Image (cartoon, rainbow, N blue to C red; front, side, top):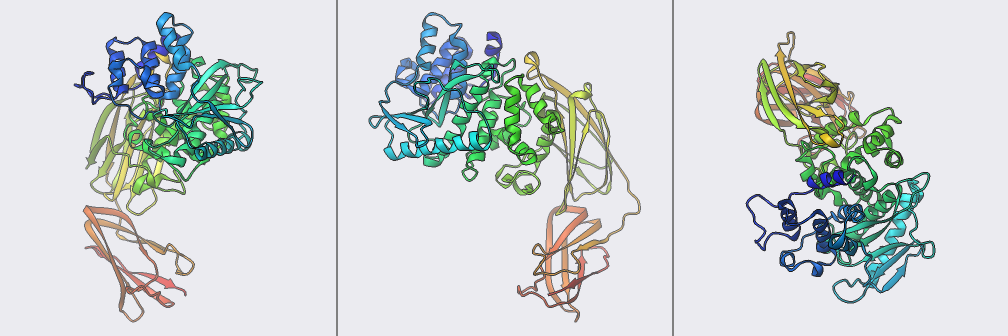
Length: 583
């Protein structure tokens, strides 16, 4: 187990850019410690202990590290977990260092009990760790609130009590250099949770350097850290065969937004996460695991918040991949298929967001950028490699109409799913997911469509092959389509009632000739143009398009009831369409 723990930490966090040296005082303490550990100047126990001292009590650090600037970190819980797992096998000075950081704060003499009597807030009103009385009372109320959400509403079991004589859950409030951290303390096995631990919480006293500041920062921290207490009561990470800290952090970050949906602290991690979907899902580097919370947002939308509880109930008894897969199989799905679906959901963000079908807050998320971009006239081949539980986004741009045949060539087809998204301008997307070497035929694609092929490596790793990469190759061919004609495909709704149909009337058109501009006009029964509009493209396109009219004339007044002609000008002959308006 200890060797596995050592392996886990090797892939933690490499923040310092190449070429920087530890002597530079501009490098953060965290980065200097990381470099000294990697170079062998620090043992693992020293590295973990110093990282925690940098957060909790930097005055106890060796002077060489004190002179480097402090940085905000959310890695405290992970380091505490690591310290707890190392202390049992350490000796001498290393054991003393670890015991020092695992020791509860003893310089917070004041106590406030939350209104429910469930939480004991430890704090001081003097010095750098001082917290205002109002902040303490707000914090106590917040922890009562998150207890109600997690235990009473979601149905999780309460964390084990560490001392029956003082049954409150302890929250220590002082300057922690970030949001907060939770510390596993003593084993508390039960029949239901044989790997459970007691724990306590440390939380910042001001929230002035965090992404979300003030009371809002405190609220999401209360949700995050108390959920860590619940998690540790079910299972501590060090008892699992495969490193599971990413599951702790991803679901705890999900819990923040479940409890306080309006705050959205989690969006700070999404530029990194969405820009690194080529990294394995279980990557633990100080950012990726927090951004992975949107995977659990997806599961919550599809199956309800109960799915997170089911996952953790499974994880209490089984290893992590079996637990997640088992929970999803109870819903008729699997972890592999949900992971591939996650990659589809990640495409529909930013300007492509579809809040009703995909992420409710997806409009705030950054767009996924393609890993490769190709145009296709007749045929195309592309290849690459990616790690287990990761994906690439390949943008395909057809130059004309055709039927697109996609043929994979994979050495281990059971390790792969791949999704195809076809997104015409202003029309509904077509999506599909296929397994292994199965071919896909995408009919009637055109130059107006954004097509994305997403090879997704769904191999569930064991400890020895955590980040093994595998090759993939895809061959595409664009076959000609005959019998396609330009014209208006449909008008909906028709008849059109502007007072009832608030989104307007949609006119779906097909253009066989390429154009950079579409002009369209609404003409009344007297032959007068009452409304005109145009759509401009960056390049010449053909294909299917949706155009809209809200039922108003050019001056904004709603037109009277009657029959109106829709006339299209796009450098090709298109018969006008009729729209019946009822007001």
